[in-house]
Figure 1 (cartoon, rainbow, N blue to C red):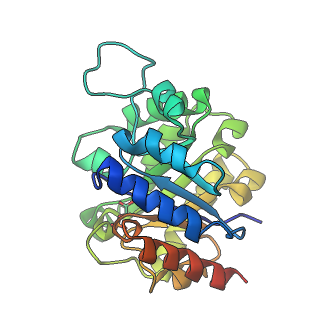
Figure 2 (figure 1 turned 90 degrees about the vertical axis):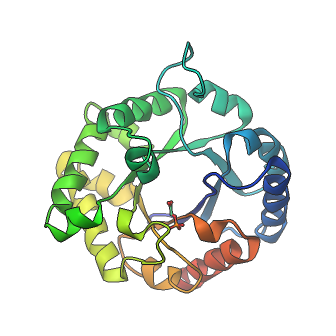
Length: 255
Ligand code: PGA
């Protein structure tokens, strides 16, 4: 039985004070939640102060990206060790904004994934197709390319430490959510890829989150689908009430 995970990706929003304030509210309002896992991913500058606030809570802390090297002359970049020293246990990798706005390639993302695993960070590895790729029937091909590149050379034990997020690019920040059936069919496709590439046991255990315009009003129908194991939430994770409501609605569907 896979445990649901609801993750908030705060993207480039909130000052340190605002991040600490939101994390503090979430800590107290979600303290009794035991039915699912919760993760928040603030900006780099807020990681350490938010880690301090989250001590003793049931909320895990993640970063939104990292560099694949340990250290060096990489102005403006941040390493896995730095994230860990700031208190992060998770890192989002391959988000569509990294791929499409900042030009990250499958190859770079694959190096980042391996480095995160080597260092003991849990990667939330994002995949997803553009609208034109879906419309021209290339969705399967794109997902296979992104998955194959990232998991090539990983052992089953390593792959099991990753979390996948299927985020159709056309649904991110657009208000257009994939229908629960569209999400289910992509998730089943991804799970089947894991079954063929690794084995049934891994495919049954790996968590696949859905991301793209998730809101309190649509989470329950998405979660109801058998292969959807939680959500990666952007816009709706920026306010305590909508993020809390998403978690509560996801739980209602579980019981
Ligand atoms: P959104 O973002 O919920 O604002 O669509 C999701 C994401 O980019 O992870």
